[in-house]
Image (cartoon, helix red, strand yellow):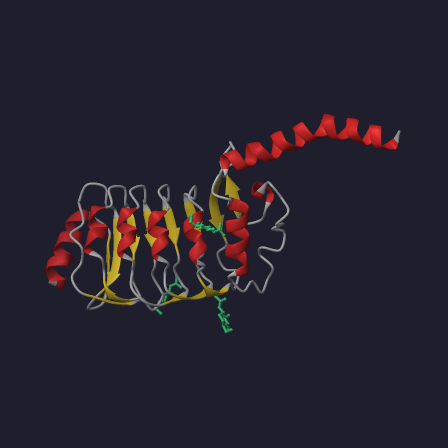
Length: 219
Ligand SMILES: *[C@@H]1O[C@H](CO)[C@@H](O)[C@H](O)[C@H]1NC(C)=O
Ligand SMILES: *[C@@H]1O[C@H](CO)[C@@H](O)[C@H](O)[C@H]1NC(C)=O
Ligand SMILES: *[C@@H]1O[C@H](CO)[C@@H](O)[C@H](O)[C@H]1NC(C)=O
């Protein structure tokens, strides 16, 4: 009798359970929960910014620091000023629906994973005020939707990838307070509104006409 009731329960509710979990998995097909947990586990989180991230959950949209689109896609990860340290987990590249990645004002060290350049929807990337080292990845120039890029106040070195100039949507770029060198990319005057780099000194350029003048100056 008990067993029979149990069977009836399973038959009634199992399809419901599967349809709920499937709908999230269908929207987050790359295993977002696994990737997010792996991301969290790669960083030191002294203030518990990610403490309500539950690996048994099928719905990361209820987690702190996560934003979702109305159809429950994970589109934003924003944990600025949380004292995070460690290196930026390479698994970040698996979060393929991200539009915003905001990790400014932390203590994150090491290199910027090249995989960030393969987040096709990324519009805003702010890693400013950390302890990042190494180069600005050339792969960032694949981010055809990128509008806002702040990598200022780190310890990045090497040349600025000239291909950043071909980012069609880029409206703000701040690379100041790093150890970058080499020529400035030849930015289009079309959409570009603000650029800040440090070569000879910190140069912040607020209009396209000044951009051209300052670029000539650093040549
Ligand atoms: C990240 O993506 C790679 C390649 O698609 C896959 O092999 C790996 O298992 C994923 N990692 C996680 C934690 O989701
Ligand atoms: C970075 O770490 C240092 C030393 O642990 C600490 O004093 C400082 O407040 C941290 N900065 C941020 C932005 O978390
Ligand atoms: C970046 O570093 C400069 C020079 O150390 C400092 O003046 C500025 O306040 C820093 N910017 C931010 C946003 O902390």
